[in-house]
Length: 127
Picture 1 (cartoon, rainbow, N blue to C red):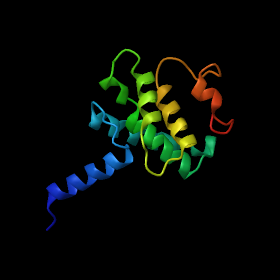
Picture 2: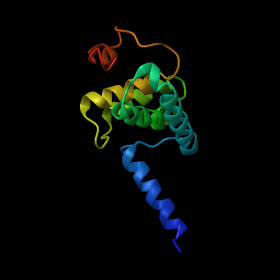
Picture 3: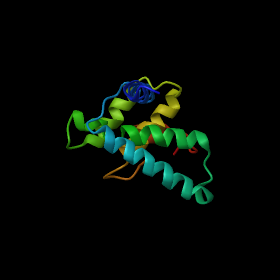
Picture 4: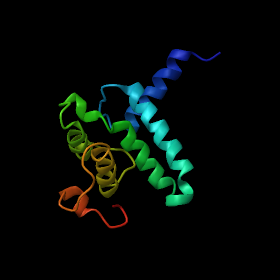
């Protein structure tokens, strides 16, 4: 029989690794958003055609989208972007980290705009 406490701790350690050690205010909410984002990604795959790499980045962004709330609620989407850009996300290149940060940044309020430096500097495909 497995020790449930150890399994839970392993899952939390794996999640912390995936999130690059960036804390979030409400982990249950982050997990739920990541689940829903994954479901929507799968359902809409025939429309966008993105692959597993894009799904992986979306998952990371969904987990971290509200990380900035720990800094400030007002403008937390911008704080999330800033935190993600400074995080060490294992298995994610610098360019991919900018994508993850942008997805988190644009989960609310303004739409992406070429005047925004991080978005502007991304490749056309990444945008």
